[in-house]
Amino acid sequence: MTLIIAGSPRKGRYSDRIAEEVQKEAGGEIIYARNLDVKPCTACSWCKGKGDGHCVQQDDMAVVLDKVRQAGTIVLVSPIYWWQVTGTMKLVIDRLYALNGSDWEGKKLAVIMNGEAEADDREYALLRDQFKEMADYVNMEYSFLGVGTPEGDEESFMKVLGKVRDFALNLR
Image (tube, rainbow, N blue to C red):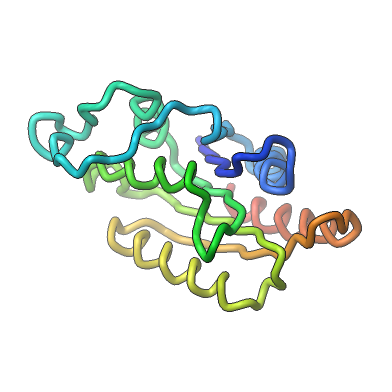
């Protein structure tokens, strides 16, 4: 199963459309981070001890963690906010700490970042490298796509969706 986590706080915008294109081509389920009640990680490490991979906090992240455990491919889609994923996506990513090493084994991590800058801009390289380090740490297969999505340029965005389509086909 493919699990797509869409990190935009803005419904129906480019990141949502990118996530929907991935779902259309690769299948799976989309979770919109903006719709989740996810509290910040408190770094209590309960999940690594008594929690045995489950967080002590009672919020929507319990369902997300179960879905990540079941997924073979996890796709993170987020617009770039100040050289980083959105705050809603960051909350979800931080809480993935609860998962044990065996929960990641044999899985694929795919990351799609979109911003107004051209795809060769340094911000994409920074994010690509950061997520690669994370994927390497938990021994996941990794792929990255950075796409420039200038606001209001629908013609350019349709070309972006073509790149997303090709990227998603390789996730099957």
